[in-house]
Structure formats: structure tokens, C-alpha cells
Length: 214
Image (cartoon, rainbow, N blue to C red; front, side, top):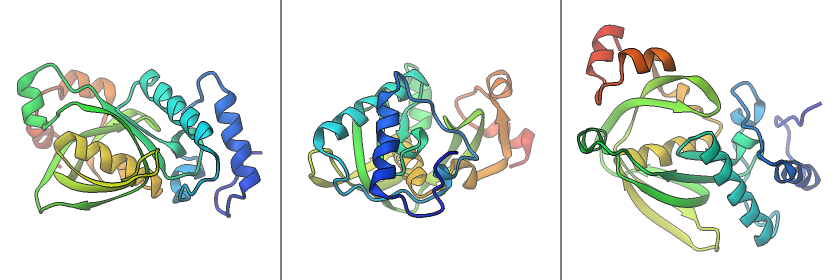
């Protein structure tokens, strides 16, 4: 029987979950329908030592790369803690990068993050999720956000992110609050990945907006 996350997770249960994840060669990504994705994650407050934290972050990075994805939250591998990793190499096409505000995002880890809008501007584009495979949908998000988090070395920081990096930061932080991107999506835009590649691979979303009526 799998661990239920509708009730508090005790330290022994958490340790067992972490040990199981770290013992796997490549831990599986849990999918929508698993309670861990719908339960606010617990703050990380030293439930395990720095060595285990480092190993967990490296494991999460490997899972993210293997998927592949540009972010991974701990609940996505079954660990109910406010930890996530982010990394995006960007795109080679300068026009696409400029239209989507997609600048490279070097690897980093965030612990106990929260974000706030930095201004009123928004940006809309298709998003997918490793925990909801096979589909993407348009999500309108803050274009600029201030992300407050703790680094793995314990230092608290607040950084401003814009464009695509801001989208990634919001997506992963939402995971830690039990929110999936579909909760914020324009559902008429929901598209199977094969249809997205065939019909809506343009740099912008105007064609899809007109045809699908969102």
C-alpha cells in the first residue's frame, strides 16, 4: 500500500520514502492522480543531513535530465518536501528565444521557495509537465517574479526572474503547493504532444488561439 499524504508525514515515513528514492538507479516520476502531487509539501527544515540533501539534489537533476525536462520538484519523485531543481539550456533559434523570452537558466536548487509578481505584465505560452505526460496547454503567468528561497548551503536569497525562467520558477513552486499547471491552464488550448508538433510548433500561440478558441 502506498503512503497516504492526506495525513501528516512522520519522520520515519519520510526517511523511508527518501531511502527508497535514493536506492533506485533512476527513480520514477509520479503522475497526476498520486496524492503527493495534490498535497502542499512540507518545509525542509533539516530532516536529513547535508550529504543526503546533496545526493537527493543530484538524483533529482539526473531524473530531470533523463525525462528530459527543465525543472523537477521533489513531490514528482514522491518526496513531500519543498525542494526543486531547475535548469534550461534555452533554444538555438534567436527569434524563438526572443519571442518566448527564453534565456538559458543555469542549474540551481531551491528550498522552501515562494514567489511574488514583480509588475503586472503577463506572458502566455504552452507548458507541459513531466507528471502529466503527453499533453500541453497554454498558461498565462507573471512575466516577472521575485523568487525567495533557501540555497542548499543554507543562505536565503531573493532573485528576480523574467520570461521563460520566471515561468519555470512559478511552475516548480506551484508543484510544492499541490498545484499542477492544468489548474492554471486555458483548457481549450489543451493539446496532445503529437498535435502540438504537427499543428502548433510556431514560435507564438496566435494560430492555436484562433483555431482552438481560447
